[in-house]
Length: 138
Image (cartoon, rainbow, N blue to C red):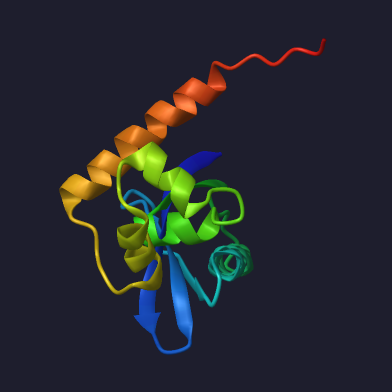
């Protein structure tokens, strides 16, 4: 099974808001999905992959098995994890103020490369801190 990167991003394309695009130039075909939600975009991508596998099988060939690893742009990440991460908490973790984070979610502003790096680095540091936590029962 080959692991391939899929980029989840916010797009402004009519009724669709999110895209899932496979970023694997070494694969002989391309895949993408779209949807009103991130889950719909992922599902659409999976559906496209299933269709390619069926077409390949109909030609008497075998399609390589793929496993998708998802990467998110900041607006998609913020939207996808809003159920668990408040803007106030993300401001403390990332060092980016809530109003700016809200602009990214709503698509009214696009983060600069340096902002993406700052967000990524601070979020990864927080994730590493969390992964080292050991909880006990007393």
